[in-house]
Structures are given as structure tokens and as C-alpha cells.
Image 1 (cartoon, rainbow, N blue to C red):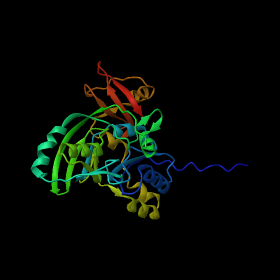
Image 2 (cartoon, one colour):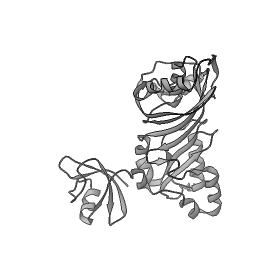
Image 3 (tube, rainbow, N blue to C red):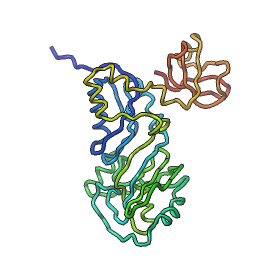
Image 4 (cartoon, rainbow, N blue to C red):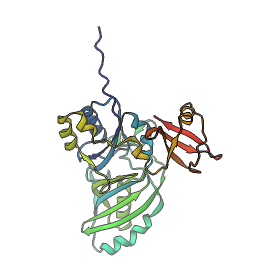
Length: 304
């Protein structure tokens, strides 16, 4: 008789992993999934192996809401090395050109940064996970191929110079989803006339989770908790509705919750008049997320 495969345990929540440098996002995910013995897990947007910082991991039912973190704003602290360009726009790539940085000072950097504020267009780099005819661009790049790409509009909400010690500068970036910080650094270097690449990158925020305001968990913390057991591991998880903390809460009666679970919009007294809402039944039992229709009813959008 065939041996029944262990599908893992049902565990729900969000782990705010502080990804270490040197491993891919998927490697980090698989390691955490194994330690939790979780039946289901996913991450919410890749970080380069070179990068450290926030990699929210969704376990169990929380994977249904991962798109809200994928679409959320991101924050980074990036170290840019001026005068050297690489084929991947970061320190892991092959050096393409070295140029002097004479005359580039903090004032020059401050002068060019406003050019990259607001809505800008970026060309996805060849070393990226964007697909071309079914193939990831980074796979084509490793084969020495370059293909035509379409520029994408992104938004830079804040771009602040934290420090400048030639040849490196440090920036704080708050941007929309889909922004390539490596491309941003490369273009800033081009604007300064000397070229540049990313030599260190740390993601400091995703949506409502920001370093200094929310605790990030290191891989060492997860490994130590695993030795203590599932109770210690599960204590590190945030509830799945925390990802939607910016949305107002709507509490439903038993009847309204019943019809909403059937996919029917319901009228809730004193509900918000527009936008997304968090849905609860029986007080604090989280049901999922809904959206307010034009007629004021609450329409289920994503339920657990």
C-alpha cells in the first residue's frame, strides 16, 4: 500500500521575516514552511538574494490575502556605489564600466533626486523575474540574451538622501509596487554622469508593516522557536486581518454573515459609504474583506 503523504499542519498567520542576505526568497519561504510544518505557505513579492529585510510570509488561510501585500507600497534603505556600473545593476553582477566621480558631492545628489519623484517610467531590467514569451528575463540574461521590454509606470512617494561618503550614498525610498530599486540607482548614477550600482539593499516596509513600528523576526529566531515547539512558533505570527488594518471594520449580524457567505451583498447599518472593509461575524471572528457598493450594501470580495 502506498504511504500516505504528510500534508503538514493547518496554521494561519503572517510571519514578518527579516530575510538574511545570500538566500533567495523562495529558499527562505521553504525553510520557514519546513520549520512550521505548514500545509500551505507563500511569500508576497521576491527580494533579491543580495537584499535583506522584510519578507512577509503568509501561512494557511492568509495566502488568500497575499495580493494585498503584493500590491502594497514598499520601503527600502539602499546603498549606492557611484562610478561603477554592472550588468545586473547590483554588486552581484559583472562590472561593465568604471568612471571617475570627481565633482559629485551631496549637493549634486540632492539636485538630481527630484527628477525621480512622483510618477516615472522604468524599463524592467534583464535581471528580473518579468516574463518574456514564458521565460523569466533573468534566465535569458544569464544566457547572454537581451530582449525588448516595455516601460512600466511606477510611483516614488519619497526619496531621501541619508548620507554621502564617496563613493557611496545611502537613500531612503518609499515607492509603489513594481519599482526596481536597482534601476532607480542606475538612473541616478546616469544623471550624475558617473554611473552607479546597488551595493546593499534592505526592505524596511511593506504596506502597514514598517521597521521600527513592527517587530521583524530573524531566521535565527524562527529556528530557536522551532526547538521549543509549535506554541512558540505560532506566537510569532500576526493575525491574518492585520494585513488589512488600514480598512475599517464592519461587524455583521448572524443573518447578514450567512447571506454574505453565500456571496450575496448585504445592507449593514452605519457601514462606511465606500472602499474596502474588514468583515467580522459574532464579534471578532474574521470573515474576510468586502467592498461597499454604490447602493451602500457590502459585497464580499475575499472570504476565508
